[in-house]
Length: 281
Image (cartoon, rainbow, N blue to C red; front, side):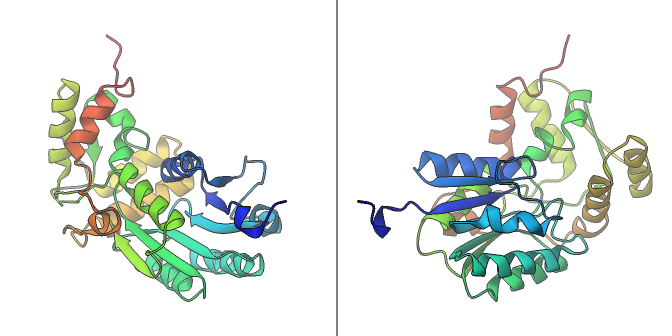
């Protein structure tokens, strides 16, 4: 006979095929958790633009890991988060973990919606990911040997996605994280020139940083056929968020996990040991 205590809670991982979502899902599964992937292509389809399917995705769910693509700063994100929370309450969801953005006023407005939900909640607030250079928009720059971005010499404490996932999993699967905002960073401030130097050391190839004007970068990005939402996000991040507002370290990883965050140099060495940055001779 199955009792209430025998039922394993289901965690809906929205964006479960993305950088953080896939890692969160994999870690929860390794812990014996029941995971439902929320994506447009999953069996229980989840699409931010199609609320009609949300109840199916939320059926039986106790916890939700919330990511909003491409960014919570997008127009309409706050309304979408509010609509999701309303459906979540109706479906008996108990715990929310939101991936948010550092230094983004619009993202913090979405955080407040989560905090006012009446449910258990945790916010993981992050900015620039290490993995942008191996799984995201900048990998082709690494392969070409030139990080060509409108970044100047503004320092940023790049954070590893594995650390983000570990913090999110702790908040989803353990007690003691309710009502916490974990602002997560790497262990040091780095300019793009520092990033290029660490990538050069890890790959054994010269990888330069080339600073370019913002408008020229966006124009080339648009000409390349990049999706509109990607163009919008990078335009926003480079023109707004990368202005020094996040040029300080925080202790979110240590507070959540009791350990130090991963350094970019260690990340670069780990990726270089795979085929991700291999260049044909």
